[in-house]
Length: 218
Image (tube, rainbow, N blue to C red):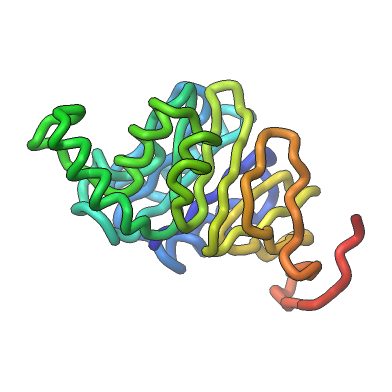
């Protein structure tokens, strides 16, 4: 399991939020992308990530890894390049083991190249496109695909994902700032309005107090 975020706005508590996500379920490597530029590796820190983020105001995709498939190494840190952009995943896809074997048997990948469930799925996304790959394989977890032009597509089947409209951010957990909805399962393409799971609102004020079951205003 891991934690991830798509960040459009560099809001006040962004540094604390990324640190919170890394502490929650990460620490085996971080990665961040903006446009065609990427910074990732097992030694990339939150400080390194923030320096990268504040150099460019465009949408960014960030991920902190907790190894559940493959080994701990820089090449298996997310995000992965595919389909004109980048892919990050929170969760574990058991089908990735079958697909990895198939990819090796067909010679699509060097036998010595390290593979993980997410890296395998990025190869499928590169061949089929993000939306069609998700419909074809229906993989569990949370999947974010950000194009080089800054357009985000989301696929969620289980797992945890929250969205804050005013902060213009998606994340595995809400930050201690702003109003967040828990996102319902489904495929969200660029421009789609995320559906709220069970019509609840997450709000964390400056004191970090969490309020649940507040009606969502649509």
